[in-house]
Length: 316
Length: 265
Image 1 (cartoon, rainbow over the protein chains, first blue to last red):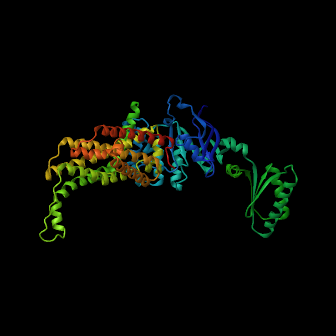
Image 2: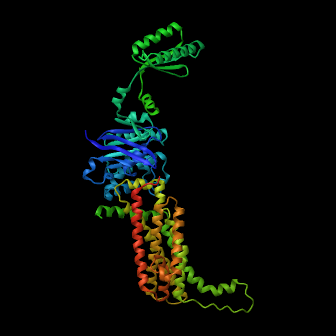
Image 3: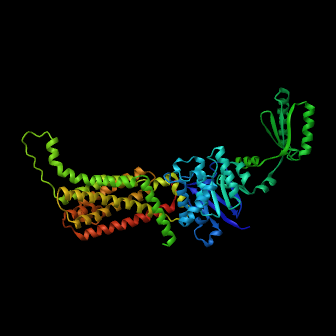
């Protein structure tokens, strides 16, 4: 596996504020990578530096495939968060224009544009002015114009955030196909999209990398056994839960050595225990519950999701 | 410049021209100039009649306004172009770069392998085509009506003054392009350009000896040329050369500004 893009110490400072502070990562050829982080983490700034729209304050980016091309922009396709076109052009005209700017002949650009518009489902609207397009159509047009020169790296900034559920699903379906053909990097604040589509994630927080790696390895490295408990909302059960939580918190803070239960999160009538070992913890819990004659509604043993990890990493 | 970047440049010029057509600018800007050009000889010709019919003159008063010569009418036409004409051109061109940068359309183009110079150059080319087209149409219309109604004007004087005046318009529009790249607000760009061009012309008019070399003096040379007045040709050539030099400088500066920050957000 070769890295298509190698980023080292990428930094961008706006006046004294460092929006991006020393990012190191690599994008492997053929992978789909998500740049994940809460709003304001520096995702857009990073993406804009990769596309060359913003000059980094420090750090370097190396495109391996660009060595013999010279202009790295020729291998990148870019779709911004809310792409703006020329509203007086038709969709077809715009994609042809984009193709010609990327060095295609007018005939090649025309063929390629029709092919791409069909692919993104805009054939019917190809001869309409872009000014009349809906948000979802503009996003799909943006995808078509980004792909017109068959880029080696497709870079997208929040490709689905501004869309309604239907438009969102359409674009995600397209991405699922595209990632088989080219290397994809996209930013998102929705973990679910990243989990759905990507091989690798880079989680950034305050301009720094909080966690990165393949999704599968992150999942196995960081997953913890948990038990979820839901109770009826009667007095007796609620009182028991409050007391039990208190007892566990006491023992957690007193003994340095962790017991069976590492952590407890209390909600409205339900509790979530992060445990050391599921079987023993479940046994213990069931005994407690039976003894106190608590009305259990649901008891579930499982593993923590990526969402829990994301929340934990981002909230730190 | 390699052939591929030349092709990209010509593709971008085609796009700009298409935009001028679709936004009807290619229609109404020349129309304004033609209107301005026709109005001058026509009002001059009918002025005595208009005064007689509209003015509350006492019975028996003799109106005796000498009819201006043809060349004088053309010089006045150029002055009309210098106020209303420039206003119209600057207003159509003021958001040419800033508009695309503010909306984000520019960033979508500039991530493609195109040079900022080609981007600026294509806008400049289309703006100048519009300006020269409108100016020629308006001026030739003025010439036609002047010959028809007032008197003959030698072709050499018309064409010479057209070229000199066109250079002045090109200078003003190139400055508009620079300010449109420099400033986010189109209104601020238009205001700066109009203010600067008025100041420049005024200063060159007041101090012809000291400022005769500046491009601001070009409009004055055009008026002088059409009426057939002799003027210091050494200073004129200096003004023409400094105008061309500043045009090239402004284009280079705009491209450099764009390279440094392709998007304004």
